Image (tube, rainbow, N blue to C red; front, side, top):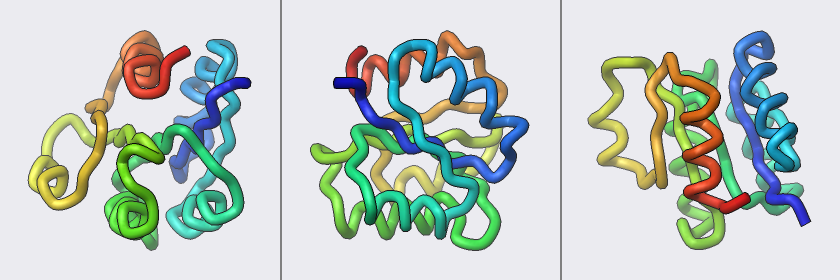
Length: 120
């Protein structure tokens, strides 16, 4: 059975290529475009990995992650966060994530991180 990933980014034009690549690699990928959508998806379905942009409008990625960690242990759900090239490092100390990628990144970096976290 394919590993299930929830990919959260408010910009579909940015999410399209990474989501397509992960699907080509054999992962089952659902998408959400807001923190609220992500939380609803996480309530409705079980995922192996949450991949999200830390800079979401409204409930940002950090709010989603705090909510998530109050409900799911890191052993149950791995988290990969995208961040701007600089900044936000301090927030990583406040909420536990399993991996991070700084933008811009190469698709090979994304695939490698996903494999590290949940396998093929």
